[in-house]
Image (cartoon, rainbow, N blue to C red):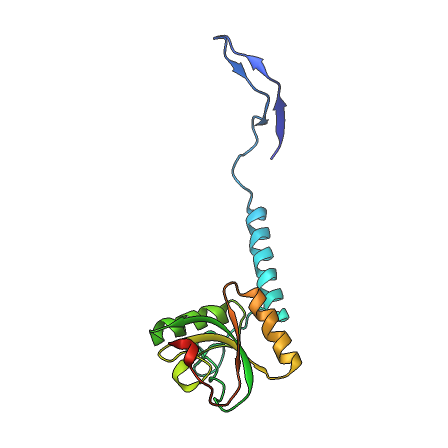
Amino acid sequence: MSYTRVRGHYRRDGTYVRSHLRCIPGFSTAPRASSAVGVVLLVAGLVVGAVLLGVFTIPSGPGADQPPATTVASALPPPPDPTDDAYIVQVASQTDQHQAEQTARRLAARGWYNAGVLRSDRYAELCPGYWVVYVGPFAATARGQSDARVAQRRLPGALGRHLPGTAESRSRCS
């Protein structure tokens, strides 16, 4: 399409018209077919490029139309063994298991793939009666403790907890 610039001017009735672009008379204002073909080719090229780079895959074969059995966000890791010495970062404590699992799944969807849920009754260090949403476990070494502190700083309101793997008093819970 060809355009021409119209300079600002006053109409006969006294109103001012700002300068603007205008189609040259005689030229079609309908989009050309070649621009539509270009858009189609561009989109096709992006899709092929994404497939080649592995951004997404095209399902094929038997059962290709079914979703995968589990996803990262829906499969929570098992809680740490109560007899193991470990560190966790406690993100939340809830009385409802379903709400705790939803919170852990939201954490996993945000990139905290080691988020999980444990029952506090099984751990002497934790107050009983809660479902604890945590990130970890981290090894009971200086490196593990450092990793737990980093996670704690990145999760506002989270508490670093040491699970010593031995029976301790729960006097602080009463």
